[in-house]
Image 1 (spheres, one colour):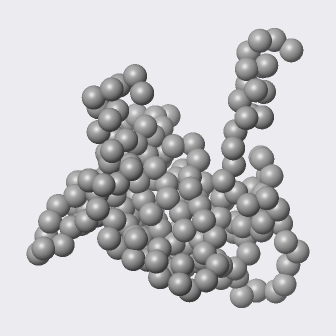
Image 2 (cartoon, helix red, strand yellow; image 1 turned 45 degrees about the vertical axis):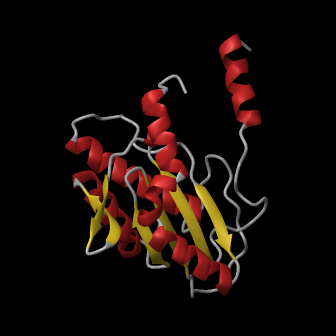
Length: 193
């Protein structure tokens, strides 16, 4: 094995997954996801106050992300979208998987083996479609739009679901306190970070 392969193997073994071990991410339920842009670049619009309420005024790229998020339900009839918000450099949303079909054996996704209808496959398809459309628009094939991974949390009770919904709704009003905003501002003044 050469040095380059050793470095690659080392990176694979040290990556930390946020996924629950042996959890079936294709099972019915509510899932909270946060997907960030590559290097947390503010690409999708800007926070504005309209009629006393903060919102993200989406630009052309933000409208594409919004379209692709909504399109997810038209492509996959086993999912529904709950509360979501597109921010300048990330999206927060609740995806509901509701497979009313026949009973099936639990499946876990393995590297390189996507599971149809699973949360990782849904997110991967959304990211891919948005990237393709935005890169066509900015004439930059192959440019990264999203960070490699995403944050997810399985919502297990109604109390937590309501807290997440409130968090998503209030996210634009708390933009300047948001860790993604602070990371973006810090990277502008300290590009080496």
